[in-house]
Length: 222
Ligand SMILES: [Zn+2]
Image (cartoon, rainbow, N blue to C red):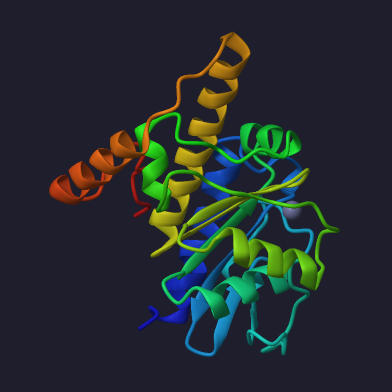
């Protein structure tokens, strides 16, 4: 059951500011959302981390009907399609964070070069093909790239991460940006040795034994 709306609104403002503070939302090009009982709450079009207030978040149904005032982010249909197709998604981050976007501009998936890649649900993080932002095609391609995963890249555009709540989504976004940066550094330095299927599998098993990794989990807001 989703948390009360007032709490969700505060969590989304915390999440949006958290991305900005980490330099992951340059030019306010990203957007965040959370699932609600009757659809979702999403950041408004053209908002900034400095001025965003809980009351500015736009409530809407997953088929696009507005619940009150405000103009939702131009990427609202991508968020809505992900909530409709992925029941475990409770909170979504979309940004043009530097390393994620750089890798996406090579039209490459993030491969199994490091065991932490398994934290997103599989042996890689896929890259959805390029189409124009804000279109139903982009929503469909993002949903497909997220099958069995909690993250994907969007070619020549950016990234998406979904999580159980705002904390989980921010931790996932920070981890994905870190791994993309590490992969780009390794690629630039030489031939990267990929982990084998067995090595990735062993890492997954190890995580099951030890529970959620403490790596890259930011402190929760008060
Ligand atoms: Zn975007």
